[in-house]
Structure formats: structure tokens, C-alpha cells
Length: 150
Image 1 (cartoon, rainbow, N blue to C red):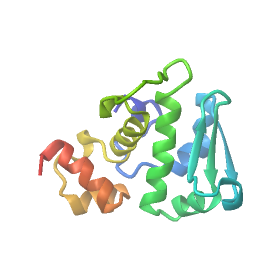
Image 2: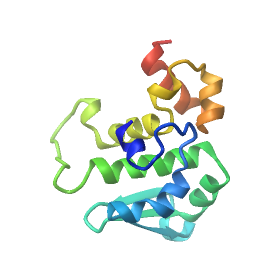
Image 3: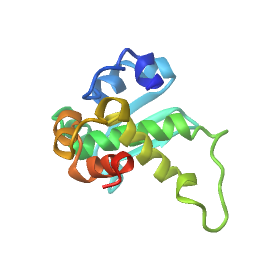
């Protein structure tokens, strides 16, 4: 909630991730680069926290502009990596770690809450979350179950 409010987006249901990347990332000290499919291969997005650069595959960026739920989630996920996993915050565990300590789980949880924060969606059903928050069914279901247990 505080993160959204910091950028004047506290009451905005549909998080404008593309506009956020284009206009707000520089305020956070993060740059972004759009790379071709050939350059990124099977990687949709990548955050280099040492260089403060978010690399986004071109087709994913274009998809997010068009409102593709999966592509929007990918951009929110990568933003989560930048905010949560700066080099001084990342620890490398040996062996099995609890899910909540896994950087990928953390970035997914961040993306879900950024796109469909509980304080704005607690009264909504699954389909409403999907449509109004621009989420895939899978992502909306995970977020919905988190608070409703169904």
C-alpha cells in the first residue's frame, strides 16, 4: 500500500506498470532496456541489481503495453526483484530453503500484491480481480486464495 501511495497510485485499481517503468523507475535509480527476442532468448525479463538495470524482452514489453496479463505480471515481478533483491539483501542458501525465502517466490508475491492489493480487492470475486486488475486467471486465483482461502 505504501509503495503505491508513494507514487500517487494508492487508490488506482489497475496498476499502470508500463507507465510506472517509463516514468517512475528513474526516480528509484533504475534504468530499463528493451532487448530483442534474439538477445534475451527464453528470458522474458531480467533484473541486474548490481547495475540497476531492468532488461525486458521486446515482445513482453509490447504485450504489457497492450494489457496482456502475463506480460504485465512479468514486469511487476521484475520490479519486485529490483526492490527486494539488491545485492546487499540477497543471500544464497545451500540446500533447501522455505518458499518465502526464495527470491522467485518473493518476486511473484510482490507482483501479485502490486497488481491486486488486498485493501482494494478484498470485496471482489475472482473474475472481477482478473478484469479490473489486468491479471491472468492463474495469478488472480493465487491472490484471491491468499485472502479468501478458497
